[in-house]
Image 1 (cartoon, one colour):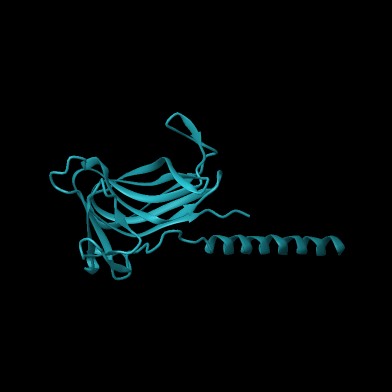
Image 2: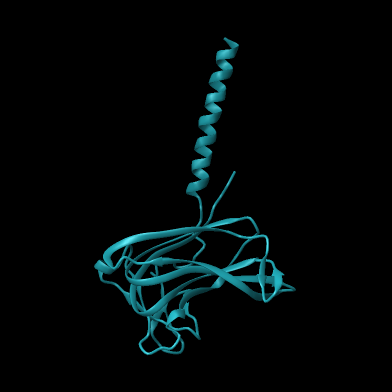
Length: 206
C-alpha cells in the first residue's frame, strides 16, 4: 500500500513539474519595443509619422512606409513596408533597427528571433554586439541570419535562435558581449517586403 502511495505521489510531482515548465514558457517576454509597429511618433527632421523605437541607420538607409491596408498587415492595425532606395550605392546594407533600449545579455543565454514577412528579396535579421566597459558602450561586432523571401503574397513566419558566446573577436581583440541591438538589413537592389509582429525572446530554463 505504501509503495502504491509513493508511486501516486511521484506521478503527481511529474505532472506538476510539467505544468510549471509550460507556465515558464508561456511567460517568455518579447524584448522588442513596439514589435508590431502600432505606435507612431513624428520624426523631428522629416515631420513624418514613423514607428516608435525604430529607425533607419543614418549611413545605410532604406525606405520605410507605414501600411494600414488589411491585406498587408499580419495583425493589429499596422505593418511596415521596407524597400531599397533606387540608385543608392550601398544597396547591400540598407538597415532598419531598434537602437534603444539595448538588450542586456550574458554569455550562454539563448535568444529566439521571429518575425512575419512577405514580398520579394533577401533580408538579414540580426544583432549588433556591444560591450559595456567603464560605463561606456563599445561596438564589438554582430551576427545575423539571412532569409530569402519566396515572392509570395502570403505571410510567412521566419525564426532562428542565437546563443551568446563567451567572447567574440573584434579588431584582433577578445571582447565580451553584454548588450544587443536588433536590426533588419535588406540585401541587394530593388527589393520590397512587408514586416510585422517581430519578436526577440530569451529562452527560459528551469
